[in-house]
Image (cartoon, rainbow, N blue to C red; front, side, top):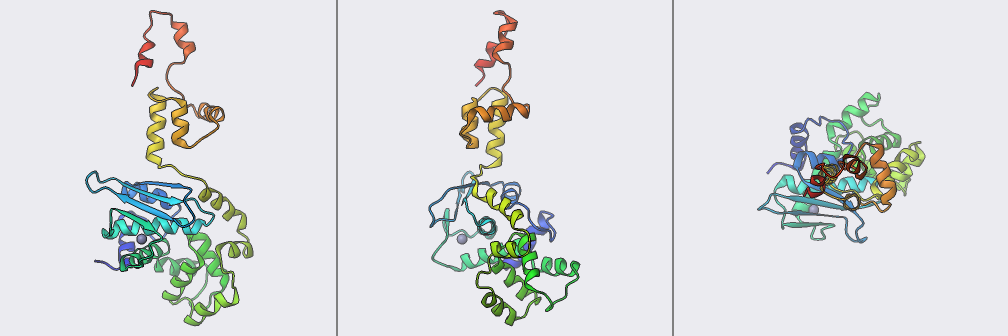
Length: 274
Ligand SMILES: [Zn+2]
């Protein structure tokens, strides 16, 4: 089996991701692994789980909504690591996994290298005109902001790519006891940007393919507005209908049109649609 670093690098190469930041981990896993990815409110003790059905090949990854945007992304990347390693110890994998087995460490390392490759640290900081062993905590903040990782993940990658010394690696957390993404965002001017990302990671997300299929079914008159609202997790059905209307999404043939056509028309066929 490849090292987690090599496997993460192979994944990026295979899917043309280069060394660029990954904007949305959900999208990457949906598009490139064909998995259903969703987020919903979980009990505090649960972060994520993956269910894989060997027979149908269907995979569902569910993560908890969270005010920790970077951690939620990391959880999805961790679950992807298990899928990439092909060594999920059971059909259902749950995070946190307190067994801290070798597979867990592997999936964690995979997630770290996927979200922030060592090569990306090098390229990004060089482009900013910085040089190894000559970086400040602001560079750490830049990496956290641009690559959407926790300061801990960025620190490990900075150390392992030899951009900070082992001493800085140990000293920085002592100098800044609250070395968090939120703290860095406040300190270095990107708090409002991060707030938007946090709002998104706090909102439940449905698998894109499911929502798309339901929307198409609604447009074909196959499911009701209420059913679509339920799939999308929307409670205010009236406002939802208005939003759909404004996007030209509506079921075929309105009652008005049917009445205009008179009794001999075929509008009943629409109602008979499955
Ligand atoms: Zn795991």
